Length: 135
Image (cartoon, rainbow, N blue to C red):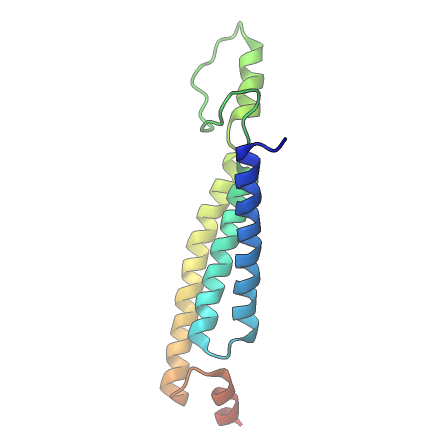
């Protein structure tokens, strides 16, 4: 029997795969530079969402996931640390996604700058026109 959370995760991952495919289509097959930048941004956001989904942990034996902050240390209960490691959300994907967001913003701004320069030089943001005008 499939649970509601497994059903939700299946739908979420399926939507992310479709989103990834559409973003790759936009990056590879759209000739407009602005559309390519938008598709690349969507691709980066989809990859970040995948990383967060990987870091998420499902409920273990009725105990919900919780932040990776350990506040209940009692030296006489070693089982508490074991339960914490099984239920705490992994912080590494969250840190990597935060770094990827900052890097993605810098790359997007650089690509927008290059597109503006192409507009100033060739008066077009269509790759076919730029290729034809460049010779």
